Length: 443
Image: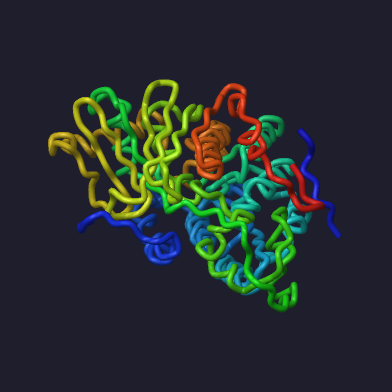
């Protein structure tokens, strides 16, 4: 394992929609949907002011879009003190600094364009929020963990299996706490669905379904435009470890603008990073990956089937749900289905919902986990226990996503060995386990 180096100097019927349209349509509602699941810090016994000496010192890298929302959640926690923010786009870092300064009533928050400067200048930071584009998630996480910082990183947490291996090894070697942002592992509706599957209330679970967007990993790129002043938008740092591509403002409209490009996106994992992780937790496979992948015969990955060693079948689908990030679990005695926006999960029998509150409460008592994903991370920073979506959970669920990508890119079936972390006797598929990183970045 090399040290990371970068040098310096609700209702209605299910339907299919486009990836870009889906991302655009759900972005505005994402914060509201997530906010409904947030437990205020006062409910955690943190209602009184927390002395500065007892606060968790936090920094943030990538503060637009989802990052801006995550930062607002961090600022709402009384035992957090945000001291620095970083973004390659000036408008975003300025807005984040204003938000932090407004929260604390001062002008102390430092704003940076280059994450290396933030990390070097703030060794007192204990926890880092990372919500950049996908290409930066693993490199930034590794840099922060090597600097002694715990990490909350948005999903997809890795671009490749090799990055996932490096992430796991770095967290182990440096004794760091890591949480990937699969927040539905900490939301009541989804936890309830998982508990139905885990508890046997559905009988023997044989099939799980995960919501994805239509598969896309385009190898083209947009035409060149004049680069802006790096102080306004640093294109070189935006690209980071990704291949050099000419600047085009079309990439800057949030993840929906670049997600479909192989250079910047993660294919199935663009949405599967949310839902496959959820499915694996429901069937007790959160620390492994599916072993067989069947090419579905279409370019969208609709109906791609993966099988686990325990016999459970995973089916990827762009349809089936009335909201985003849906999952469905089918057992011999019943089924449950849920997505964002559902007041309560859909179930095969109303009787399954009768104990909703009790099932969620018992889960919280048994595990000591809150229904608040960022709070779970902050608690683990203090206690040093593993998070609900730690580095292994992140890596293993992403390995299933990456193997599904290999199946789609090669347009044929593949077989994955979770122990060896290789495709069995498949040199072409194994070439997809890593990607070249643009100098000077490497893991």
